[in-house]
Each structure stands twice: as structure tokens, then as C-alpha cells.
Amino acid sequence: MTDADVRVVDMTLRDGMHAVDHQFTPEEMAEVAAALDAANMDVVEVSHGDGMGGSSINYGFAAADTEEYLDAVVPELTDTQLSVLLLPGIGTVEELDMAVDRGADICRIATHVTEADISEDHFGYVKDRGLEANGLLMLSHMAEPERILEEAKLMEEYGADAVYLMDSAGALLPNDVRERVSLLVDELSIDVGFHAHNNLGLGIGNTLAALEEGAVTTDGCLRGLGAGSGNAQIEVLVGVLEKAGYDVNPDFFGVMDAAEDVLVPMIDDDEMPKLDNDSLMLGYAGVYSSFLRHTRRAGQKYDIDPREILVELGEMEVVGGQEDLITDVASRLAEERDAGAAAEAASDD
Image (tube, rainbow, N blue to C red; front, side):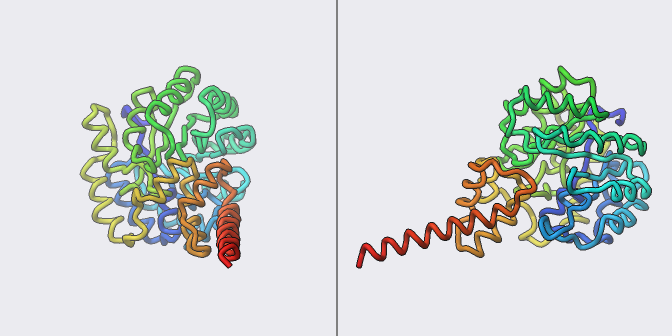
């Protein structure tokens, strides 16, 4: 941790990969990382959007492998720490070893909010390799606060240095955040963090709510780049935290410049996250933010409104790793539509 009140973690080169279909080049990553380091960012995370090992037909192939990305980024970081993401079942020990050998300082281990028990061996290995280990409880709107506390305590028992509440669907309201974060802060002896998505337009507001309840580390992305309608916009977050009286390390102007002068020229307009009807439905229905682009493609293929698909997925309580269900739902909705149209045509005859 730093001496500042809040540790700020930039996700542009990890969660932001979702927005660009994981197509950042190593050279682009190096340029963004250098700008963030110059702005005194506390931590930069680098991985495929779905963590190390995520480059696949199921999650989307990246423009390069994790080794190439880390080799490009590490020389650009001086005081800024380097984090990587690992999801049990996707990332492997070999990839973790590679990240350690290339200078990773932190490994964040992410599980579904009710599945912390699958992460015990991963925390043990990360700690044995000498890294800081942070636990991420994803889709935290899908569990009551007391259940989240149980899962967080497991991660604490396994050796986590911090536990993050992940609003992966951008579905939480400020009171939901307060209730969950305050319980973790009161009951855990380790740091508590918060990761926001902006699908209900609450990325910054929810982050402030989490910090007011005692969270001490939080995430964001330049220009809000990220899955769904994006993460908390980190240059806005730094400015808001300063106005709110928090001591933070990142330089406000420097982070603004990293967004405006470095990231924006790399990004096409259609890749920049927007709070539109489809991404709003993610938060309303409680669907994993990284499903948005897959859902839009399925909607186009089957001529189905993506919002209809997202409503169905929300009712099914889908979780990360079930991306194949998006096509199944779109296909079924199309069949039901066509069958209904055929029946109506027959009745007219």
C-alpha cells in the first residue's frame, strides 16, 4: 500500500481490453503504461480482459500473448506497481510463473461471488512466489452481504492481502455498496477494495460510497474504457477524490493527459464505452458487463433486440464463463419469434 488515503488501480490495459476486443498491441500498451507511470499511478493491471489465459475462442483472442504485453510494459514502469489478473480455471501456474519472472508485483485472483473456495491453492501459490495477493468477488450483486462476508473471510483465510467487491454488472445502487462494504470493513482484518462498472451511471458515485464506508483501494480506467458501459472513469475519479479531500498519489493533470493525448487517439469511436440502451440493460438486468459485445453480435446474427437477450440472461443469473449461453438464448428467441409469426400467418389463412 501507499501512504495515500486511497490506492488507485488503473484497469485500462486489462478491463479496457474488453472494449477493444482485446486488440491492444504491445506497443500501445507500453505507451499507455508510460503515461500512467508519469502520472504517478499507484498500480497498472495488464492481462487479457478475462485474465491470463483468457485469449481463446470462448473469450476472444488477444492481439498478443501476456508474455509480450508484460515485456512491453515492464520497462515503462518505475514507481508504478504491476498487477496481473488470474481466474481459477482460466489462468495457469505456468502463466503466473511467467508473470512473476517478468516483474509482476500483485496478482489479483477473481472468483464468482459465491465460489471463493476454488481459490485456496491459487492464493497459496501466489504468496509462495512473494507477490501481493488480492481477492476479487465478482458479480457481487448476486449475493447478500452476509454471504459475501463468508466468501471474503475464506479469501482472508487463504492469505489474501485485500478483498475487492466487484460490481461486475454495474447493478449495485449506492446503498447496496454501503451495506456490503461496511460489513466487510467491520469484520475483516485486511483491506477492502471496490471495482465499479457504469451501467447504471453510478461508477463514480458507488466508488465514493465504498470509500466513505472504509474501502481503501479502488479501480478505474482512462476514459472509463472497460466492459459494458465501462469502469469508473479514472481521470474523473482522481479529480473527484481530490475535491472530496482524499490524499491520492496520481497527478490529476497527468491522468487527464494520459486519457486525452495517449489513449483517445488509439480508440475508434465505436470502441469507446457509452451508456446506451444495451449497456443500461446490463446494469438493470444484472448481467456480466463483458457479455455486451457478444450479445450485440448474437442480436445482429439472429435479428433480435440485444435488450431482449440480456433480460433472458439476467433471469437465468448467468455468470462469467457462460458466454456460450448468449448464442443459445438468441437462437431460441429467434425460433420463438419465427414460430409465432408462422402461427399467426396460418391463422390468417
